[in-house]
Image (cartoon, rainbow, N blue to C red; front, side):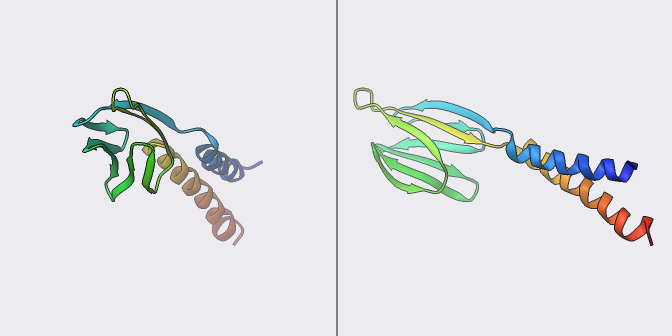
Length: 120
């Protein structure tokens, strides 16, 4: 096996591993009037509404046990006794994206070398 074939296989393995490996799970409890960050998301509770926002805008809005808007998969529970929401978000951080892009770049560079430069 030549070095470029090993680089091609290594790049594919890195990209697939970035897709298969589980992401991070962040959890927090927010009561009326509180706000904070969970990973890349901003969480806010106001007037009984749970609002989760990203840089692109609102991605999740709920009022007690009723979901109004759901663009991301997250788990939440509402406590009637305390009026607080417990939110758990699973996401893949920027490291997974870099590993995926790096793996594809490595595999693509090795393929380009083998297809167009080595056997020309």
